[in-house]
Image (tube, rainbow over the protein chains, first blue to last red):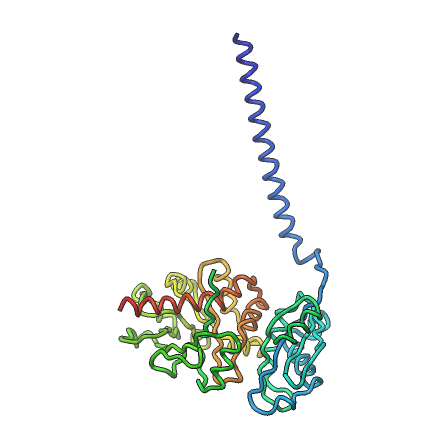
Length: 155
Length: 203
């Protein structure tokens, strides 16, 4: 009787220890993964840059909206972005005015997704375009140009 | 889940028809201004009074609005326990304050009131290559949950009004994680306003 009880006890103990060792192993593995990810984040892993399309409107404070040209707006945006993020930042983000409806004052700015926020901040720096005092109001960000154009049509 | 009420707690410009329309267009629903003495509604935009007071001018009696304490020296936060309930948030005058020691930060954290950062000032400093070390210190404390920070436009005219996304973008550009940056623009100003409304209802 006693050897049988001991055998069952040994089996239970071994099963519990197996379970505990598996749990510990999985926890340690998870912790190592988290630490490794935090160490490599931002240094070795480069995210693939994707384009984002920021739909915005030009709100004139003083002057006529029709005086705001596409070239003037693009130049003002580029200047503001360079002032904020420098030449390297500008070449990385490559903010491009892909569409501008002069009559409605609506435009689409294409920028790499990693620098979308910087582009929106640069928009707030644009205070004057072609002698017209303006405020740029970012309306929406889309992943494709088609969706951005569709949004503009509905707006 | 209800959407947050977007508020600019330090708009100092005119409240004419154009400005109010522009503010509404940019998404603001509530604006705190020192130019009004009582709450009013202008074309769908709620305007609440705001007062910026020095330590010596406290308490402000009978004021129904946002009360902001202007901290100009380290002495302004001494015996900070007495300030609880007298003000809704704190604004720090960084130029006058100069270098601060650990005690000042300890008092600011102990006060547990939101600290107001002004978008136009911060942007001017960033573009003017001035030191923003103290701002960064506050933002670091904010991301660690020790302090609450909110951003307001500080616009003096319609042309200076900032889009809330641009304000959040400034914080993310300074290294604040996006959820915290959005919280400083969308959530914490609303919390400050709710505290004010709660005070009215109790008084």
